[in-house]
Amino acid sequence: MHNASESAVGSKQGGARVRVPPPVWFVLAIVVGALLPGLRLGIVSSGPPGALLAAAAVALLLWSVRWFRRTGQDPRPWKPSPELIHRGPYRFSRNPMYVGMTVFTIGIAGLLARGWIALLAPLALLAVHKTAVLREEAYLSETFGEPYREYLKRVRRYL
Image 1 (tube, rainbow, N blue to C red):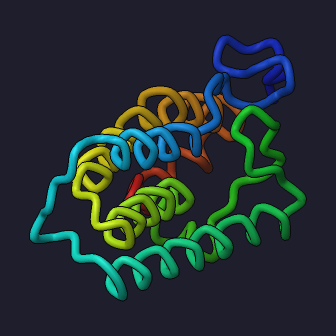
Image 2 (cartoon, one colour):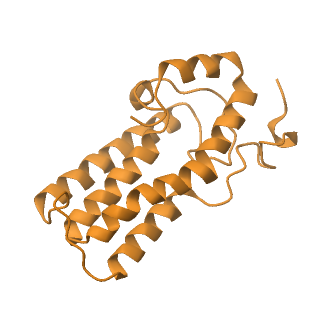
């Protein structure tokens, strides 16, 4: 197996070369969306629907992080991944944490009745895709080889 710290796709710490922590993009979407002038969208309703979305997202995030902790891993993408996780939410999505962050952002849009936040959520996910997901996939492919490529065939990237 390759030493990921010497790889073009791995960082000095041994994980993927992710420079911006992925949650930053979603926080940015929430802050910018909250500051923009009001925009009401039919898909975003304030109150309970937003709260339910946010709660479901937090549950998914906690479930995802729990599997990282169970396997002795750190969810920060620039840390090394000693094993592939293909249980729990990772049976359905290769990136359940990013799905959870996106849904949470949309839930916050509902809670705050700020349509801009909902519109910015997919842009935050796109930024995470470009700055983290593609780098993580390259790192995992280099680190785990064929078992990871088989996982790619079985499980969708997001939903």
